[in-house]
Length: 394
Image (tube, rainbow, N blue to C red; front, side, top):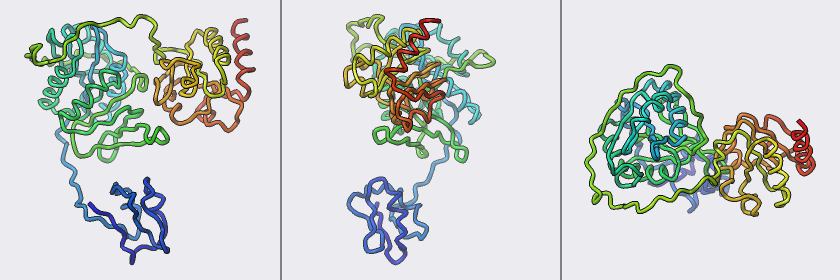
């Protein structure tokens, strides 16, 4: 494909210059021109009112997917317990299901899964696709990819959602490749295009500096992963018995290749900030390890957990498993205290599910105040100890 500008039609308005995300369009002698930065993304084509930007690409025909029905959720489980992200995906799945008037289904693999049927139905699953085999007790890439891809090819769902966990980050791209479809990773919002009925998949892009909405109009199923804590768990108002579809499984250990030699329990020290009700988080404004200890005292008084921004982690004030934001954990506590945090989009993307956000910052122009429910304008090193003392007196 090639893109060029017909100089006779160009009026030099400069709209295409602003539209191009790569700086590939520039004004030369009152006319627009395309330089060697162009990657032929075609973002400029629709912007030209004079129709001066031309291409030799043939218009791509959107296939008819009206026969593709159903929203699927991969029900990740370990030792017979569902990963919480599964219930979160069923929550957003219920919303998508109502908008499209299509059934919501869960896909669960394991050696014993009977105890998972009721909770999956309680959180919205109309259908539950089940694959049971001793070799499926633990997640192994080849086995899970093979069985789930077979199910997708047999039943042809419209949408397939997977949690962006360690397991999901391994499984989703392999399924995407096996099925020959696109995949949008780490989505923060999912909704339906009211005009075409496509899944609108929103995620941070360009290092988190903007939010991009991605649409897949040329293949099915539409696949997306969602990080834990982004969506809300919602029980179905009226629970009914789901339809259970059992997938026959024929596997041998030789086919799977991977052998699990040992599973080491990580213990009880792992931090699950996405399950905390109260979180006190510090950013650059904390200034030191001593400053972070003040936040720990406040968190203790509130019965909450301590978190940190990427800067706080890089400075060594908090461990990496307490990082919150685009490159850390996504949280949705009842109360989120943002202390000394400017509020960059990368951090805001990880906290917008919080019920109430309290910002403490001495900069009145800090972006965090735009998303906060309550704001305290002041030095956190003075405000936080006062809050802590008041709470201890109650």
